[in-house]
Amino acid sequence: MQILVDSGSTCSFVSADLASKLFGGQSLAVPPRVRIANGNIIECPQFFSDLSWEVQQCQFNSAFLALPMPSYDMILGMDWLASHRPMQIDSSRPDYGSLAREADGVTRGFSDPGDGLVS
Image (cartoon, rainbow, N blue to C red; front, side, top):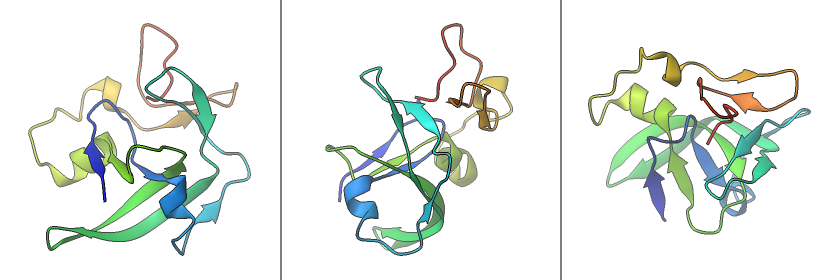
């Protein structure tokens, strides 16, 4: 299993391939759209609100959006980092605020001088 810990990602993701093998995912009527590393915007049609997983004998329960990604099985974003504190992060800063779906349907999680899409 390949897991990326990414402080540049507002939320956590599980690969669509892995998600297809899991139970408990919810199909989203209005999937959030996120900007991925190459700049493309894609939809995340499935959500896992309480996925149990383990790494090096440590167990976690986390929320994940399913995302088509060929390189990783999971991406642990700022939501996971802030709640588990493996390093010091000032999560009170406004750029690590909660996700909000804007009128154009794009999920945004921080103020950005550009377009503010989740990355």
